[in-house]
Image 1 (cartoon, one colour):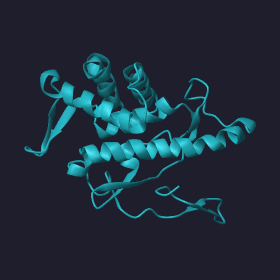
Image 2 (cartoon, helix red, strand yellow; image 1 turned 180 degrees about the vertical axis):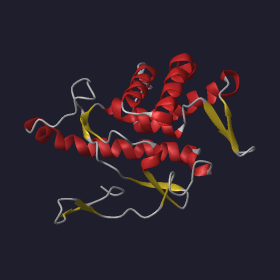
Image 3 (cartoon, helix red, strand yellow; image 1 turned 45 degrees about the horizontal axis):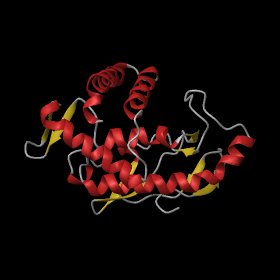
Image 4 (cartoon, rainbow, N blue to C red; image 1 turned 30 degrees about the vertical axis):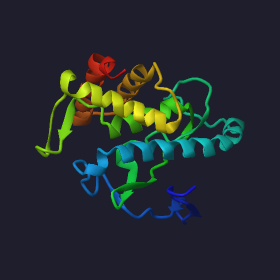
Length: 208
């Protein structure tokens, strides 16, 4: 599949040797305020990429089950595909303002499609207590009357592009994922994910 690192093998220390994905990333190149991180094109591209990835990865499920590949930290229904498990915006590569690839498959494991889609949707909308404004070039606090309708539109746009109805349990599953992040975080990161989890629990129904 294009847009993912290719495995060349292992080095003398047992480390994986992967191909390099050229382009820019949200973290390294400070793309957080760039229009490509807020465009409908990016939302659609990300959803279509995840659909292709999931459809291709289904073929690995028999081997995964045969060898007992799983992750006890992610209890869920019968696996549907191999999940990336961290396909948030910080693990995507952009070139010429368009999404071109996904990396960091370290936590990949069998799971459900919906489980794997929560982080892409959460991070690219994004569904945090703040809204970035291009006009002011800064983030402001979320307001239901100003921001809820647009968040709902973008979430639906993502699932339409993926080819899935807007799941009724999306908010509950996203809240669960933020709680899971809290279990594995500490310091400022823990405080942030607690705040995000509270925000989702209190305002998530605005986006359904």
